[in-house]
Length: 266
Image (cartoon, rainbow, N blue to C red):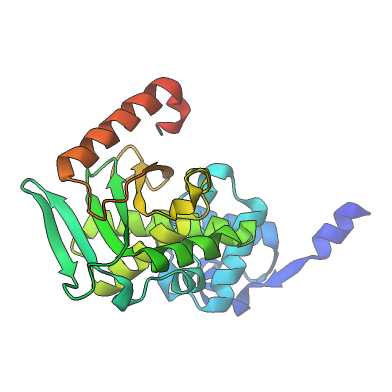
């Protein structure tokens, strides 16, 4: 009886343009949800996720929640909910400074000289496979607001936040020259992700500011599956970490993780 019920649950692929395109050789476009997931998964590299309309993107994410493996769910190419990104984006006026790390140290990308004197929180990203390092500073209140909002979200939105951050890191590490929109999104998702972590909660929700650092573990530029590894440096000096200090801390955490948690080192 249960089996027949499942067989009745069909979806009309013609409602979803990219799914319909993937099924070009199928006469019958009424398929099960599991068949739809298999079609997406098998041919994912041919999809243009950013051009999906809201309806198909929501359907795609729903299938991922139902049928995706743990590894698939943490791939930055999955779980991309652009409504989630827009809801967790730092406004341009909330970005005080962004910088990328090069051989000479921090290279400032953007800086608001008029607003950088108040209490700040700093965020950093280190990508394992490319060595790309990025930093953002934001008013403590703005950073905390996004982190607190994410901390109260249901688990499904939390997964979207984590997936969106992984996707953005993969995208930005590949281009290295970020647009203002990318920096707003990356800074916002970093702050939001902070609110979903145990280290943020254990660090008194960073009420005194400090440095939130995310290490993105992946073996190579071609590997899309990521493991986000956060840690916090408590500090109320209201200044960014020196480049050599940040890298030394990253190397220490990396060595510790390789020894204690080899399964994290994907």
